[in-house]
Image (cartoon, rainbow, N blue to C red):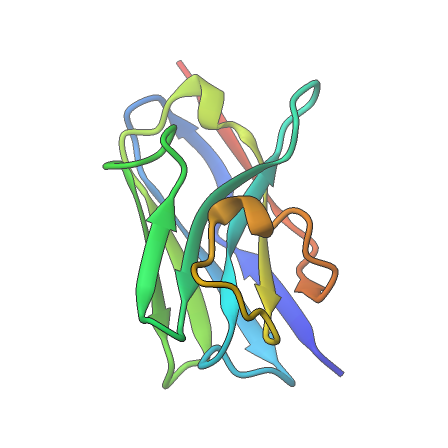
Length: 129
């Protein structure tokens, strides 16, 4: 049984940083399209960052480019999202997701909210003044 479990969310002041973690069991982060998306009240789900192991590439939503960094630690089977310079609009529930059978040319972050493969339960990020 595959499980993805996020951690690292919390409350942070605007301009601060958080690092989210996504630990996997029953699944290896060494294949497919995987990454993070977020849900905020009244807003559409937004793919934030992705990694495509097929081409060892990463991609980011314009809203987080230059501030967020996605990475993998294959030894720990864990995916991370380093979030710097957090803004009020970054507040959301953050989910990690993975699609091991993805075969597209590239893996856009927008694929992550719609994949029906694997996703975690989410971790809340709150940004305050």
